[in-house]
Length: 487
Image 1 (cartoon, helix red, strand yellow):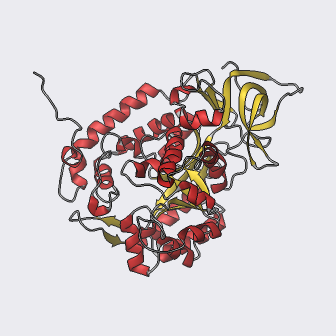
Image 2: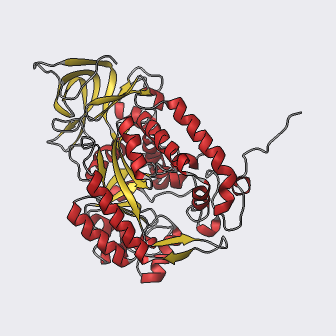
């Protein structure tokens, strides 16, 4: 791709294929041989032609231009270090979830330099696979801002809030420790963080409130979060219905499903994103009759579906198409490694087809819409996830002649089912090119990869510190093949 765009300039983009947005239909449309005009950080024109004056041109006549993906559920501070450890493992005592044994040992072994390495690596990985807007739930968020600014991505940050924590001391049961004062202090810090940073760096840095898990937050804390969200006008995201153990715990505490309980305390609103919401009343995993899907749809909350973190353990949402048909706004996230929205699109479509035993469900159009318009709706942004006048200029430039993109008849099907990271050539965020010729301009890919490897080398020997039985990394997650010294 030739040409560039600077802030304030009017730039014309001539493209062979454009996934444009039709405001009248409220949906994406396929535009052949079209023109996009960007002025500053926004799109001002989309159509077959443009006769106005421009300052610069981008020749994308060998490109497919799509809106940037809105990744509504990420854990940048640690997810890259899931890789090479969490796969193929899952205790049946915890219904295959890795939350209660595996995540604590990773956290115990990881150091702050490792977290910083994760941030930089994540920015590269996400941009290389099409994410232009990220919702991060985590810690050390000042460092996340530094990394995002260097990479040029749009980043929403949700400092973690909770007044309880789970643990296991025997590998058989989940226990909880409570500190309500700590929860209130975490909420105050989160509010202060949002008030200091929301809208900074040209609007690329935004905040949201993140009560971490439904089972680690008291009713009083969630009511306070709800009040602050209303006052600040920011989205809220909470992990809920993400494990069978959590579901059973909430039923034991309240005689209600997690979704019923949140609804009963007035927490569910259209500004709420439900992280995962995969173990629902009415589904086979919970084996507990309730109308959770109906409650979510009526309350207007969105679901952040991160297919891979569950599918790798043999757990599937029942199903993406069922949620969508119930009227739930579906959005997509990555959650774990690999942090690839291209992979998220593909697995969301395929796993739903397997669960439903049907082909014509969870179509390419459905999941692509979730990754763009669904994510934008979840955070209350009608200027993201679309190529239309008035939208932010967050654009993906796929090589239409790339190995996995040809033959190209239906560009959305090719993106969802075939595209690889190498097919994404260039990325624009907020009107600025941040990735050119498959290279993220603000970060050195090789350098961040080396830093992440070093972080893993420091982490693995220290994992035993966070394990209830003191087991080391190789006991918790044996090598796929035994080490061998050679013949």
